[in-house]
Length: 44
Image (cartoon, rainbow, N blue to C red; front, top):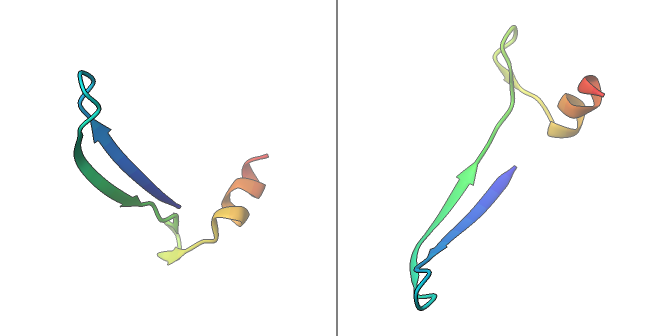
């Protein structure tokens, strides 16, 4: 999953900063990445 962030000053909506956060899901037993759809399917 990738999240894009933007922070604005409340007073005049001037853009102060931008950021990107990439989240990965790893199987702790095998140390391999798992597809996010597989991860959530197991939780439901």
